[in-house]
Length: 226
Image (tube, rainbow, N blue to C red; front, side, top):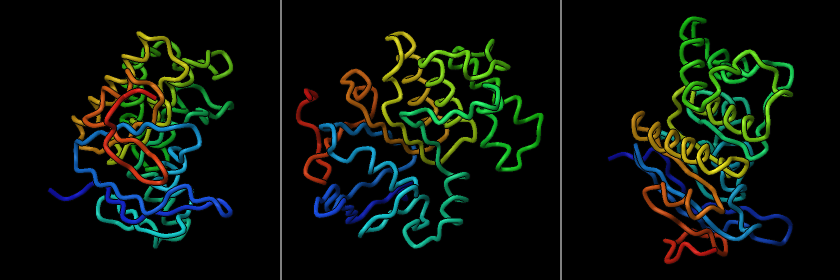
């Protein structure tokens, strides 16, 4: 089966310090991995590189067979809009838009017609338990609710690759379980690939396999202890 995501020899340095050092990873359609590791190990850096938000010092990243490391900024933005769903740790919810408008935004940028945009938006908001907050401004939502908006927005355009950076960090246990089931279920149902970065042992256990980022490379996690 062809890889949905292929990373080969990925390297990133900050000054003299190597963060990623020859990292390799390959995911096929429907595969979902969790990445754990110490704070500062480079987990968020890896997600930013895969999403094309940062540039690697060396190596290759291919999404659906397209090498993003050779694309210019505009081309990376277009690919990210079409193929990547990113759940940011800091939410990145736009304060001047309603909850529904925030979730709908990826579909607007892709030119999806209004009726279909609304249908998908309300479906995802209902799935994360926010169907009744669609017209609310973000300032009226709690941190946990904003995190759920971010999850809905990341999934609404049915991306080929889902990247989630600590998506349950602001959620109570029951809501976290709902979000984790939604992420895993969507990745499987849509034949996407997914990477979950987390410090949570419980969250990591929902993935197909768990990898540890250590000294700039990924290896199978022999223990879930942090």
